[in-house]
Image 1 (tube, helix red, strand yellow):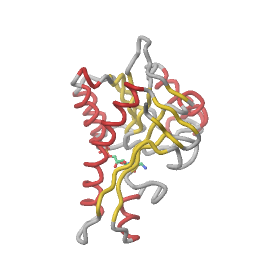
Image 2 (cartoon, helix red, strand yellow):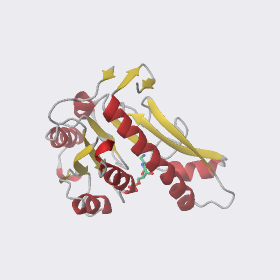
Image 3 (cartoon, helix red, strand yellow):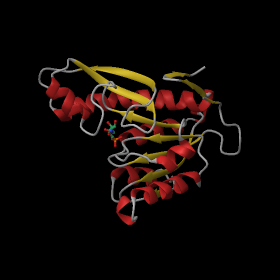
Length: 210
Ligand code: GAR
């Protein structure tokens, strides 16, 4: 599948989905201040209220929306509503930046192949919600972060980029995760910019940015 740069009226626009502190979102917000970056954040969506990520978006005057699983009778209805909310902004790319929910069939039907997620481990090692803790418990000496194109599995999609981070003997989950997040923000800003500006190709598991 080839995703070419969007040249329509919403060219360069992305929607970012978040669940937490939003430091990755902030890195994207900061990058978009430079017009040469070529990316506009059309909206920020969350699966919960009262998170710092939403405050960051509001401070930057970016439209926000909240779509909570608990407000729907089924997970499929939530997924459909999330899809509609994102679709309202016609993004070229959807970026999951610390979004702690799995998107479903409706979402992937519309945004599959143009949704990326950032994960705090070198996939396929340590998928799931507790990657830095599991890497530390396992005793690995090197971990890192992965940007990947979302598919229907849990952190299984084609890899766009990875960045390695060494594990120190005295690391705690917090110190390790913070160091991973520093690498993650750099990787996210760099590759989201390139994917939006230049387009990208996914051939089986291989992602290429021209
Ligand atoms: C990031 O490290 C991201 O990779 C992770 O949550 C953090 C969000 O930080 N996501 C996952 O673990 C998803 N499985 P942030 O809210 O400060 O951007």
